[in-house]
Image (cartoon, rainbow over all chains, first blue to last red; front, side, top):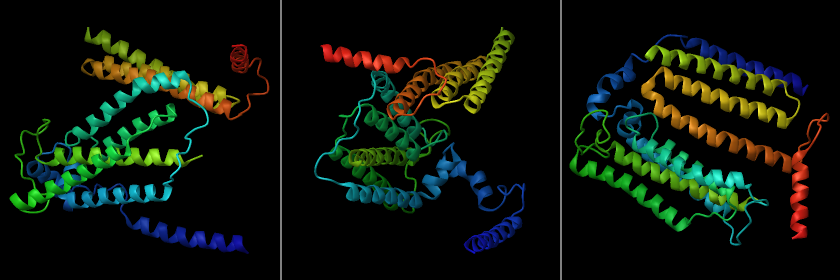
Length: 228
Length: 118
């Protein structure tokens, strides 16, 4: 009886999903109309960013990105509050082997450099603050897993995090004071496809990169410490 | 000169693709975790390095970038496979029944005996 109901239910859901998706024309190029075409045509002149995705994320929808950063901050804070424990707990029972330890020591600076490259060049190449921050946090995760006693200083991390978040908001307020609106561009656009171009976009993405990297690193450290 | 380089590049890429295919076959066909792991990491290390360096030879202006990527793969892939294999051995995953020798068990015993003697 339950199986029959489940099959009926699945069929019901499947029918409506299929009928919805059949309404969407398949294989038709839908980019070259509406708002997508507008971004493609005017994006480069208006923002000066060679990476159009970044120009949309940080410039056209910069306020939305500020909201995303806040959501990530709240998630990290909630996680820290849930997992906080006063007594220090052991991280892992066994040491990593000497091969992993040596390899982690060699790879760690390279991973940090890659992460910094990704968020500094966010307006030129694919990637940006969120991706670069995640890469940096993965480098720290490698160190956490290789060395049982490797710890990060949470005070420094939370200071980096809050100052990076403040930089984002201050850039937005400067746009309100000297430009037209919140997060408006107040710097010269420069030459397209060079490092110092696209106005405030690189500054915002560097701040986001620091913030996301510090947040995720602190989160990983908290989670690994409480797991027994 | 450029032609020779690109022919070399295509040869190297085909070589790498062949080894990637062998790696995929090994993952499907090998009997236990450790055998599958060596198929999925040793063969794919050679395959990925061959493919990427071949691309670097076909487009010589990318050569330096592909060299860096290959070095990164050569560093990270063996280390991670070593960590995975050691982790699965320590957590007690059994080897294939028809195994001949378990060299790692012997090595662990010997090092423990040495520690006791010292």
